[in-house]
Image 1 (cartoon, rainbow, N blue to C red):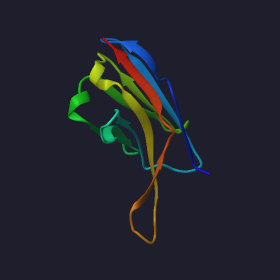
Image 2: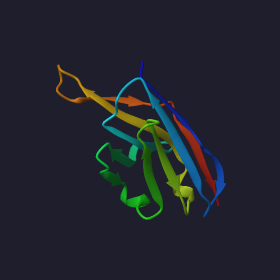
Image 3: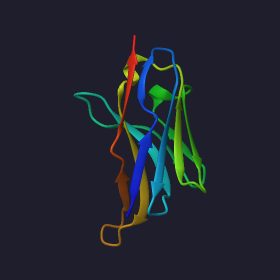
Length: 120
């Protein structure tokens, strides 16, 4: 059974830092990453990291956020620095597993989310 369990969210002042963790289990994930969703906004990509080490960041977080992965532990981290109120959202861990043989597309999994609130 696939599980993605996030931790590390909380309340922080603008300019501060937080580190999110996501422990993945129950499968091999070609891609692990983070998305976020603020109230009344669509869920958006924050950062992803492949097994091969390729990273992808949203423009809004480049230079401030760093994604990393502990492959043996199947855990992905998101170090968030210089946080602003615009970063406040629920952050969801995302994992991309095996290819669905019917659709030909990778199967995606989501964690339950962790709240990040940045106060001004």
